[in-house]
Length: 371
Ligand SMILES: *Cc1c(COP(=O)(O)O)cnc(C)c1O
Image 1: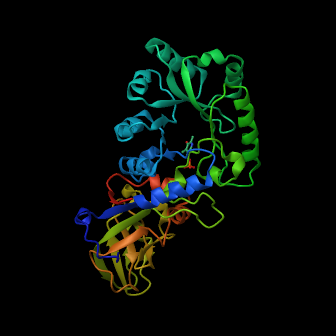
Image 2: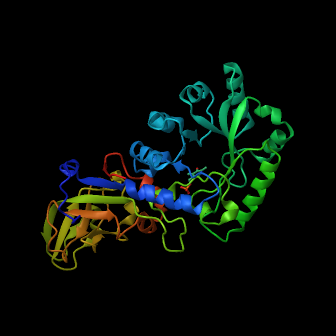
Image 3: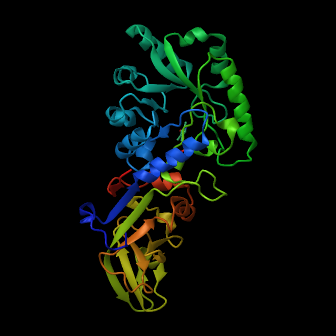
């Protein structure tokens, strides 16, 4: 579709839109499944599917055959539970005391990362008189969540603490999966094998997006990719094997012609060095465009870069369109798209693609290209 000729009704009054290609997400999931023949590949849809909208992404993955979903919080799980009948829906954040009945009643699987959580969940199972599904999280190096070495040893010596649980998976999470040569990866692989050896037999879950690309040793039974589904490069120093998913577009609200020497935006950090045309687009840091990209990123129009000038403000960003005579009020500029990926924008903002995507604000209207 040509820039500037969008006819979608949804865009009619929006200053900024995020076009999400559900077909690309599904294609990425299939590509990951091909690289992970050992067992199923889950869809990690936490943080509203990395900003893409879990309510649309989760059903698209389900329709493609995905049967395992991970979110970070119980509220995230509750929001999509009804859209995922018969799928395993697990909460990575663990079991907050008092929430057990909600997990049980809505068929949501807690990822248990401490003996206290295990005890609370087994007590819930006992009280209800039937087994409850659980995923056990072992800490092999992240030192955030998951059974620490002391608690793991206790559990390994007393499997009865798991009585009443239907142990669906034992999982761990990689510290440096995107750094292929990091010795931590091998260390975690060894620790995970040792941890599982002393626990009741259960399928294992190890690899995130980059873990799938580390090789067969990290494959395990269930892979848990998130970022790669949404187009973030799981192999940062090599060409991106994933398809781009997100196209972030902002409408030009106004165009000004300025004499040389005129300042633009807060603190006049940029001054026109020549007579200039400046476009003001309806997107700012409140939409998730990081303020730190000022002077470092650009937009794209008809595939050509358009320099971002001056500060990124809350709702507006300014661009030097002196060399783009076709840009006028109503023109759409691409902030994310083929010309500038989430990883590119992340480099400009001093962050990673994950933060770029999850920063996209609710007020940016989502438009879905169907799978
Ligand atoms: C977020 C998360 C994932 C997905 O990681 P990606 O790098 O986005 O693929 C997998 N497992 C756990 C425990 C996570 O927190």
